[in-house]
Length: 183
Image 1 (cartoon, rainbow, N blue to C red):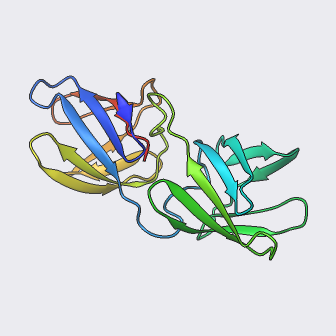
Image 2: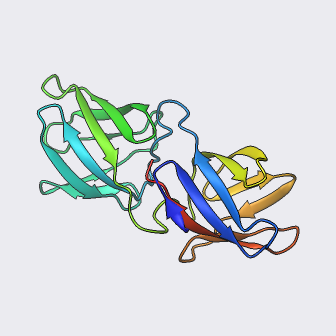
């Protein structure tokens, strides 16, 4: 990853004909913003204005002395240890996940994605939908599943390298994440 702005991942390649390739995140409905194995940094925001920054690791985090784990439900959800409240994904706008809860005191909770440094845009286990864009203007939409996808009849797998990378089957070009625009 060269850069990540929260919406677009910029990749550099070893192929001089395609020095950069862009992946645009496709927000596609409830639950697509976050998977139960998410490992991004988020600012949690309550309607009261209170905030807390949290780092998820494989869908797990600790907040206010309690450990939480995202569940592989549809939409993604989790339970609050304190009182059993269930919090479920309602929507995603490309930057903020809006959650609903079963607790009338906290009907909505918001998670704002915190753009981090190079390489944080995408992990080798990513499962989002992306639009791939080449500098030539050509585009293709793909659905990643655990970092794997098929494009133009070839199967690809993201590698757990730093930064994240993969090789093009056709010519061995190595593509590495250059940047992420934070959305």
